[in-house]
Image 1: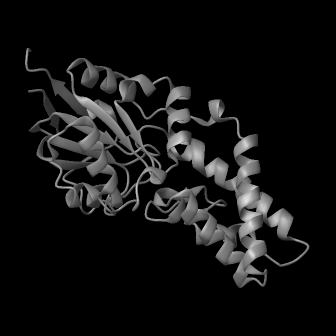
Image 2 (image 1 turned 135 degrees about the horizontal axis):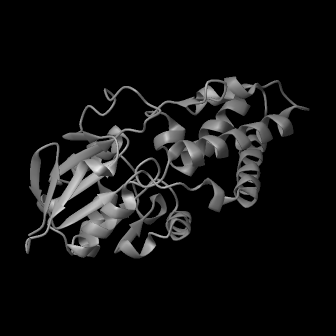
Length: 255
């Protein structure tokens, strides 16, 4: 059986499950810029009805556009698209906009921003991920993606990055009844890939990823921290922590 080595610790593995945003692709390049466009458009459209401010509304989803920072525990970082629509709609409602109008506005703005986003230019892989996926795939480790993003959009992002073919399954928030941090996604992935939970690892950039790994009874949880975030304390349930994939090694059973 292949061995995964991280921080001098060895794990016998059959499968590895990955979060997507911040784990396979650079969160800042994609979602901070997408979020900036989303908020700017909402503020522009709402301006004739209510008073709202980009920085103020940004706090509701866990970002500071002024400082270019995000909360790794916030809605933009770990929430589903449905979560974001609800939170932003609630902000507009609090400012005096009728709820039905708020939801409709946020939903329509999100669709427009998605259509206008040049995904090819926004999607940047995490350092070392391509080589790591190639080594894992060559070692016959089954690979899956479990993401709070919608399945179709996740598939599209992986295709653009040129790494879709490495993964044996991709499971989005819309594929299960309960999203993160509930264990539904890793449980479904293990079922589809016929994986033993105790021989499956999860890699993610949020503590929610670590918690769902624990709830699903997975072998271990590896937290990955981007260079823009200096603390690692928010990954309190991680068994191991890395900064990029060059810190991981795979030893094939035939080596």
